[in-house]
Image (tube, rainbow, N blue to C red; front, side, top):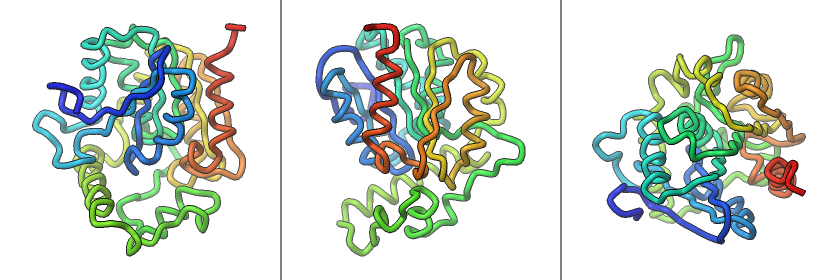
Amino acid sequence: MSGALGFSLREGGSGRPCLVLHGGGGPVTVAPLSRALSRTMRTLTPTHPGWDGELPEGISQIADLAALYGRHLATADLEDVVVIGSSLGGWIAAELCLGVEAARITDLVLIDAVGIAVEGETLADFFALDARGVAEHSFHDADRFYVDPESLSTEQRRRGRDGIEAMRALVGDPYLHDPGLRDRLAGIAVPTLVIWGEDDRIASAAYGRAYAASIPGARFEPVRECGHVPQLERPEETLALIERFLDRGRA
């Protein structure tokens, strides 16, 4: 637990700080990426409040999570921070780059982020999907990643239920977006990389291109034969895209 701030935090490596924010599937969805990045960076991978128990008082929207992590950056006096967010974590990351501690952040990576409304592009109803449906919407190769719920431990099932309930509370209405976020993305002032699985059925590649186009100077990188979670389905390619982005002009 990260002190009085009230969230679990896993750290690894040393060097430039890198905050890695998970999506609705929990910290397991970004753990391999965090481990890979920790070879050259100091990674900080929180478990969002609500994903390991009930949502605490004062956390009722995505902006509250962004503010929480912003306060942590300030308390820890972290500068030159890379923020990487996957799916729902991308939404938190975008809000963080628009918040009061935005000056501490110098690079942003969004991986199949949600949070905006795009005309003609409907986000899949995650809450209506069973485990098989989640796999089919999230991965190009669903058979490779599908996990039978009956094979999960009691603790894994509990954490899964916690995450679903936290999502319902935070992004159930309006569903998976903030109506004003897309316009506010113009205020993001750091170099931004947007990575997107071309076969994402949660949020389409067209949605991703609109996301990138809303952020000044953002670079859009599609990943072929990949769904909503490139860091799991195409880990080497995703890591290479991130490392090239962060290493630009530093040779």
